[in-house]
Image (cartoon, rainbow, N blue to C red; front, top):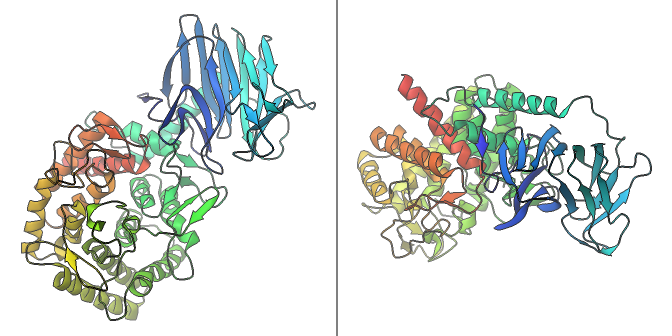
Length: 562
């Protein structure tokens, strides 16, 4: 099956590449023409592709096509840093996106006397882009060595013609290739097909979005570079071009069974930048690591599932991860715990991953049930991992600590009919209609039956035709496009579905899974979705959404076969 996707929603890219081709050139900014957009040192539109006639664009994993009655232009990746274009009957201008060159911005274009290639140096990415003409005589180079405002680029006639475009650092030997355009297409087709077969071998007519989900993950993967010292699945090759320190967990889980090495790299990435207190960065990308916030400690929950799916994990790696997880857990139990208090706290909604959820309206600094829940599960996993590593003393201590934290959660934040949030200094408490208050369902079988039943019933109030709204749709604070104040999100869906299943509420878990899978099959893999209409919102090529679909679909197929 050939995956076909809308180019306005999903960039045309290749695993390992730091650039893609897309009309999305910035935050919520869609251009008329497709651009070569690089994610080195940020998101930068470098080149604009302007066909001579208005053309229809079709994108598959291996081939991008501009089609007009007069002819076509096609593009494919030869390697992750080299894209080939060829045209016949349809001309194409490949122009520098920023027309003005200053001493610190824009792109400078020149003809390289070594091989006569057209090269531009881009201040935005700090990289070079070389255009080599492989075939065709009707070629015009504009703006060579121009400074200031000027049109720069290569204009190709009706053809036939073919060019190669490379992204590289300071220098590179003249371009040479041993493959034809069609051979390059076949190679990409084979590479993606092999990836899809690894991560979604179970896909069938009842999981129609699985191949596209696999493409979203594959195409958003970048090679090690900058601060990303491992192969990394970015959240998107649109503007959400980072790895956040909880998003990566869902990508790791989706990849675990089929591509365990890539999955393990995803899990380990943030720990490469753990600070002296044990805290993880908020996010990592090519040229920055941010520590101004953290993300919730769902890593124990994640690691337990990874260890179940990846039985051959290297013992040395497990020992290293144990040390990292101990420090990450102690960060919450020391740096984020007021002396004398039993519960840790967030400093802001951003720490929770639910940036603007209504839970944080009364106070941003707050003890919450979701945080305590995740830490109970994380400490349970530390106890299990310590046992696996033969550290029996550690295992006993962690089990005791998990019991204590679970008791504190239920005694201090459960009122008898709901969980509340609490200020760590004043001890003022409150509750809102945010789905975040129901996250303790992730404790599964550790929840008392009466609490489980109340949470399950309250979850039903959040369940629309399409899935779990992050704010009760009946709430006065519900916003259709309110980020965490209404829309459906993938991570909350996966966490709650898993908790319900472990709590024995399998019918409700099945229902939530089915609705979310149907939502993705209808609306793609957006950052989040309108809870009433199901429309995709914000970034439309979000990898944790694709991963959530793969996680839920794989489990659904397994249950069906059983």
